[in-house]
Picture 1 (cartoon, rainbow, N blue to C red):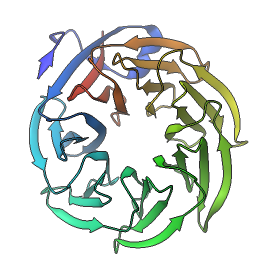
Picture 2: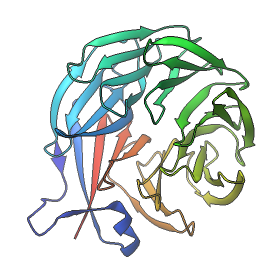
Picture 3: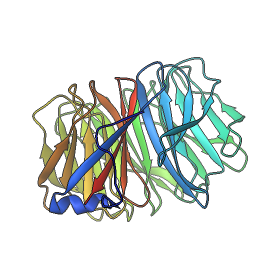
Length: 319
């Protein structure tokens, strides 16, 4: 683990939304994976804050973000791990892999509970519904599969994309979104399961989708380098956050919905935006290669990034 600033008692962590006032940002980098890190996900429980990571080395690792300590390594996939996601209650952790499977791990022990099969090609994204009752996974074949987490049986296959599904995300109000290299985002109703609408991305090749925690905002990021913000009450694009660098691989909203983080630049830059105004607030740098995943902690005080430089970045706002 390496840190570029030593945090003192006078440098207390703050919410990332305080970036609106442009304070300092502290970075710490966690090392241990033996390949590019593709995905990160947070979990907060009564036992504290935890971070999971998935890597090209085929492993899932669990970390203590407060200390930077590596807690355990979970092995079982036969290919790169592209996506990790915690169940809302922390009882399980799901991972999607280039081996075409989704593995479900016991959140307490790290043991494999289930191996979900049926995808055609690599699984690029996994996401739990907000109530934890469903798990969605998207694959190379353009399919989104939905699994019942009580039985772990496959219950729906959502079709419509014409190319690889790179990202899936649930909203708190009963929607599922998927982003694909066919240049579209598809939005699905979950009760009953049926298509709701298709959204065209300005620059095509959708790499990432995300809902704000209240479900009122939706973001889609493209390989062409732009992020579109959508108002979910009308599904009209209300802003396009132009980024004149390389394609954007991941987006995430802060828990209060005021900030959006976007990543993907070959130089390891993470961009932070004001969601309300569309203003670019700042870039944070520290990685030495592209960043493929980004996640805010549930309290909004830590931002985690997964990079092709084989490290995980932890970013904190300090006074």
